[in-house]
Image 1 (cartoon, helix red, strand yellow):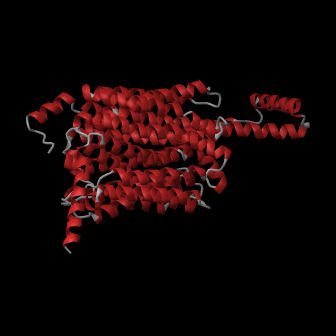
Image 2 (cartoon, helix red, strand yellow):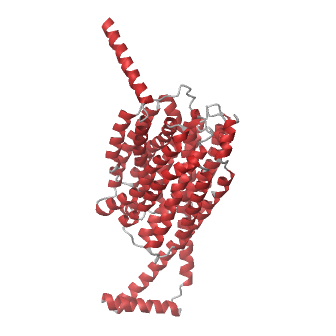
Image 3 (cartoon, helix red, strand yellow):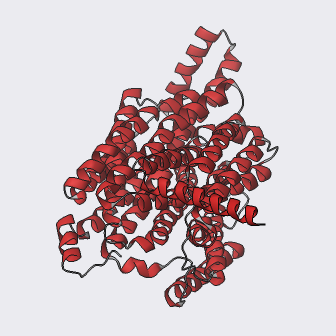
Length: 543
């Protein structure tokens, strides 16, 4: 018995030495950062890799735009529902354990997505993926902010942003290549080996951390949160659906809006009054944190919505392959990845507001350029707008994270991270839903305008048909009757294509307006000098 007790003591001593070595080793936090970057890369990859495959999935399952958008929004909604709960789960069961579980769910969800045989199974599998991703992303950010001191936090968050940038760059390109040369299902299967590697590294590298002050779980807040947003997005997607003949006045659409409004009211009331909220919205009393989240909301609406639009435009209007449409995003992530660490270093040494403001200017300019697209838009014009966007995104995220968390106590980091990531995902889901709904309605509007402007008896119409018939006969060898039929079909197809492009331009105009709104909160943010002064005078306590 004494021998067994001695062995137990030795094991405890060895375990303590290992924990002390992990905590005191200056290289440990950098190993953790690398581990978190891999998990982040995988989670963000699945937000970007899917966009270029949407036309192929639509064709494979025979569904329309209103159905295929749920492949994107289901993932983002599942993430949004888990983001606020991830902090509580980590405090209750341990950060390493919950982070590992999130990676495992994401990997299993990816496997199920690749095995999907219909749109319903794919959407359900995406929900499992989103639950995992909604655990990995906020905890990754919280772990990094906990391990790195404030003087190194900007650099660490800058390198962490590289993982997101790499996903933006390589996700669409990898997805396009797999879709064109193999099958769209491989875009999900590619996550499985990456997930296994990330699981192994997490098990080996990370040490466990648990908050001893675990609060009660907010069931009322959780239930109301998972009701109001999905119901709202369902109403937005169904408002212009082809199966809904009554449009926005349909009783079930109005009922969805009413249920969503009630659930949202319950959620806000609960979070502001309960002792242990799911999302501690009282943290928004922190001035810069509140302003940063307003900016993140409008920024994410434009960013996610436009990322959904551009591959559709390239493949539908310009005839790009999935690989070609994915390749255009490659420079965006590379530029963002190169700029993010530099902006992080600069934000540690100067006022982050200036850097973020300049990045937002570039971001807005890139959207403005995309409001003039046509079926004759040249490749270099599209790439120039994306180059500018890459610079803008690289200059926004890191300074914004740095300045928003500068006044946040360390014990509140997990909650703050949960709020920030929830805001981003909710805004992204709304952006995709709103711009998809707008695209459908504006395409229909322009089709009616162009159709009514076409008159079979007008001279311009007859001249166009005559020219098409001549070219079809001359280069295709068709008879007069067949060439005339093909000419009419080609003209109608061109009108339909032009209506779609006009709808895309309208969407980008809305995205530009949304991005421009972001200038308002950034001007109201406190400067770094003012924050430091408040910390020195004791007005703000970080402990």
